[in-house]
Length: 411
Image (tube, rainbow, N blue to C red; front, top):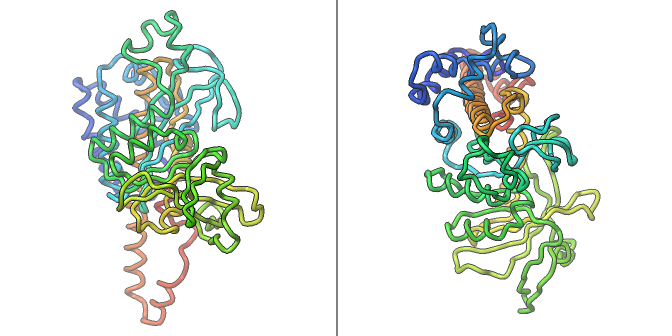
């Protein structure tokens, strides 16, 4: 088990409760039991969560029964996704930021659906891989994945021999930004409480995504490239049509403010920040800004964000949301390390979704249990402190957390 589950009391009963929300998907008792074992195995201590190692982890002599759950047993992976999404909101709170990004799954062969030589952020280069586009939900209490789409290069869909019997007939080519729009719209339609949307430049440069969010009055902080052309109306009523990098050069030195984008692996992530009001496209109470992040030591190193939000939004508010985008990277890291997200051996369209979805559910459960572990540790510390003399109690409550404490933001 992961470190959080090793020390948390009563977690099996809580996993039973979560699985109970999806158990009706499995009409027969045997595949229902196997699906429960599979979910627990994804949280287990096997180094890799592939077929044989998972079989050993859950006590099966062979991996065939679990493989049938992914291939032949009838169940709806999208309804399980809906349960995962609702569980994440329930556990992490209703002040969330929706974050979209993609991750690569490196593959050696050419038969897995969607595999191609394409850019993988995981490898940091063009490599043979599948690419999944994901949606995460992040609050101050933690973060987890709530939706997923497998990206299919056009070559796969144009090749009838490759797609026949392996990809549903109604699946058409969609760009990664189009997938992001569909997942965000679906989450909003399902009632996911969304305070902001954040994404990197691949998605931030998609004007259709911006229009979608503005029409729904959903604030956003979306990264764009330095060559993104934007419109600004200056205080002198001069209309400028410039690249984001050129607009950043207009910020005077006293226009930058040092702020933290949140806690990283090495502590607070401090940058210099500034913003410029963009030409307003919406009526009050909404406004647009170009948010600019500058490296404290290398001033030529800048990042750019197009933002939309209430007129009273502060610079610190925008910085906080920009910093929250990194939460999805932590989701990918933990899901791959602890929940088997990348350890699948399936090749089909349905097989990919049927592995990825339980992995997301395992990640959601882990995020919830780490919150509970923090609560248990906090309650134990409070009980211990209450038994101390007053002077000692003040000292105990003011001391920094130990290295073993679990921060909810670390997933």
